[in-house]
Image 1 (cartoon, helix red, strand yellow):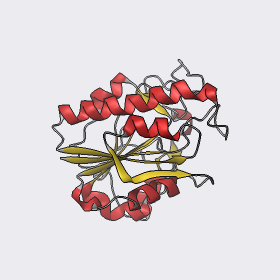
Image 2 (cartoon, helix red, strand yellow):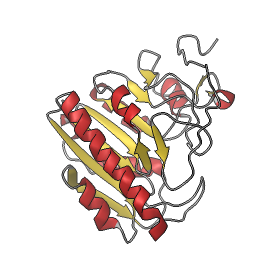
Image 3 (cartoon, rainbow, N blue to C red):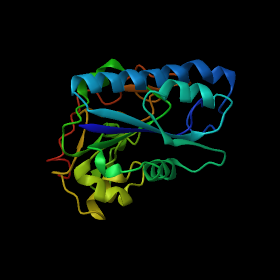
Image 4 (cartoon, rainbow, N blue to C red):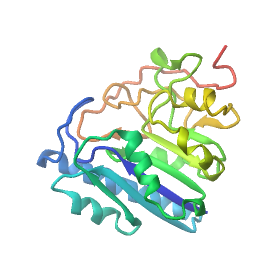
Length: 238
């Protein structure tokens, strides 16, 4: 099995949702910790599932710490996929630029994008399974705001895409509406889509406790606002 890990978004970002402040000294330590957790995760998964190889692409924005970021990922980083931008492009464009920078993408068994500014917790190392042959979102959003029409409102911090679904890459617009888009526009079904964990959590770990990651350089909530609720996709539309 050969895996492609794509890290996208604003690195060395400081502040809560909507901030554009990045590349300041106060942002340095936590971003380094997040990126180091990514490497530990890749090494854990490579060993646990006997990956033949793992490659990394990075699509982020220029700061004075570009070289530090490259140094952390260098063991796995594809030379063609070191992408640093000045203008704000958005996650979807960053993801597609990263994908388009990879040569022979059809040789990979899966693509897994992760937002670059999240620290991966140990529980995520345990629950992630790259042998599942479905598109996987990390979780559904918290119970009070969990629907897009009649479909799940998904956490958009990560996305796992097995080779079987590479033909649907053009449908990937990163955001909470992606299950709805894949269901309506790509005609995918519950047999094609699922969650990595079955509990409800807001994607922003500042607002709601998340067991598998936290966003660095902002406070982390210890309160879980949807306790006892379990996602069941077979009954969700009822």
